[in-house]
Length: 144
Image 1 (cartoon, rainbow, N blue to C red):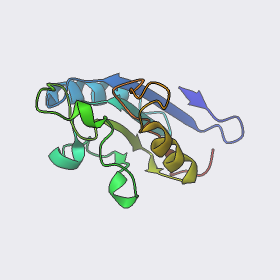
Image 2: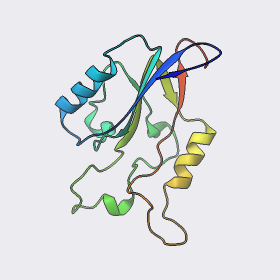
Image 3: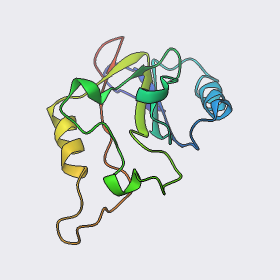
């Protein structure tokens, strides 16, 4: 849990790695995130192995960042991880969800996503099976 010194706003951040397509996992995560509802804002992020642009089953009550509003790749995994021989999540599997605020892409976020969604120029390989996911979180109660 984080607290802004100036405003005293509290932000709870949870990072997850889920199997995808398993509603009980998401329900357990949301239940855990909301055990103590005293935070001004809750951020849940990570690898969900599920493309919520396709399934539409993102956590109810949470704002989410949708790359469709920006000139960005609609996937967060590289092309070689999208093949039929790949068994884990395809599409955009990395997400940021926020309750008590909104998620936006500013120029810094867009640049970060674009610059990390490429193979390493020295090796021509991906350093990870994911590109960067980042977003600017704005709290409903004001700036932190």
